Length: 141
Image (cartoon, rainbow, N blue to C red; front, side, top):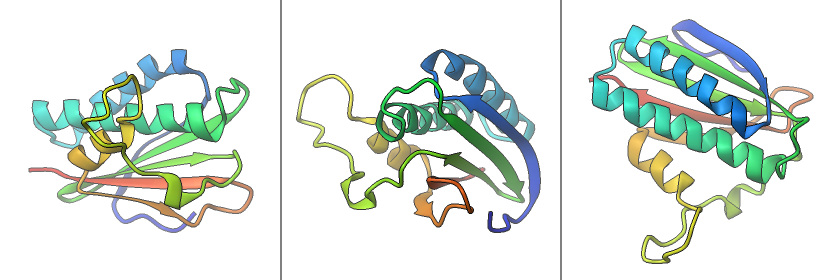
């Protein structure tokens, strides 16, 4: 993977199972607090990372519980960097966009939450052997 500036706060690997996200949310919450995020910032980051993980589970792995996800959390001065790596088929980045908010139906708002909470998010070239690398950046105020 390409180098990330700052300190590696956490790196975890977990299966592509929704029931593992409670554990992930707790770790993200603790990491955000450790890095100096306010309560509001922390809760927003937890939601955004959870939504990104759910997107990997639902769309990249198509709910296959045997996939693997890697979450890296980095702290660089006034920002946190979150990287999600999966080993599914590469996604079509052009198809990853939020649906219209007036389209009332369950689901489909994950990318909207991510864009609202994070200061930057993008798919980056994945490391060898991986399918996708999604990076989110949050400035700490």
